[in-house]
Length: 218
Length: 94
Length: 112
Image 1: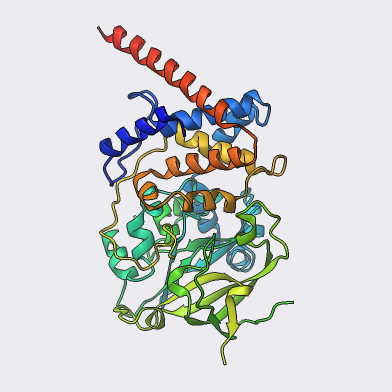
Image 2 (image 1 turned 180 degrees about the vertical axis):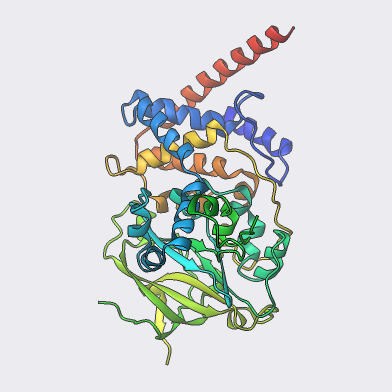
């Protein structure tokens, strides 16, 4: 690191508290040290022909195109089609592929909530997350508090999300440490018998598929 | 060929080497039951240093009882945590 | 020694539920990492990136935001592999910083 960068770094140290507020975007003020570094890395890789500007643009579009709506479609299909549900639990990759979601580099394990068992997902080591089904993970999923505590006091953590489970429900935490990625198949809420697949999908939020919340009938 | 099958009881090695390790600290030295065999995967401890990650290692999902992981576990006694662990971190329980 | 990233079971405060939409610079480093790791390039594995993050040291790890850590690590691995050099990186960062200053000056004069 250059002397200049070091000084810059030093200034940041004092300017920056430990709570990691949302990062300012490029338009709102001078670029931070790591924003400069990321921009420089991108430009150098393009100049050298390692990547192209078009590939980078297309990749960012791909990232923008992923959202929990894909996961919700999968859940709603599983709720309405018992055969699909069985396939989803047996071979997650093949089942989501059938709905147009490819997960080429990871293995999808779908874990089903029942009257007796509630599943919740975490990555205590970094931020492994089923991005192809849910998009980018929320800030809290990547932060210290959730990663530290949900493996040790899951009920207390779920309560902070407003989720109260019956006393006799067992919680099964899934720590994504390696090549598997997890999706929670929540329970279909009572009172939704007349709803179609599309209406059901609208009930399935991102947090339900991480396991910190449960879908509610409208 | 996988050394363990679903239902087998295993111990996680109580080892603390430096380097890039995907076996969480909190589970080392604990015992659990094989939930499933995930397949063979490149070894992250090698991949982390730019090598090719071979030989591949068998990866398992191991289920642990929370009350056996944490001495002071205060929630449901049936609660569990499932963790992916590579073969070389596991030993058969006696 | 316990890794700085290895958080399971450590004491911590309540979960901060506030979220922010990822900015362009955050998605850019995410996209760069995906491209560098793809089948065509294979210039970085996810474990190399994680190792770079885990090697930042506790002070830096705790202080940096999520994508700041990614940027530090991915850039570090590209330096190690000789894809870019320190000199190129330093010059390019200085050039972009000058462009950024000029942009802010233009924006400032536009307001007044």
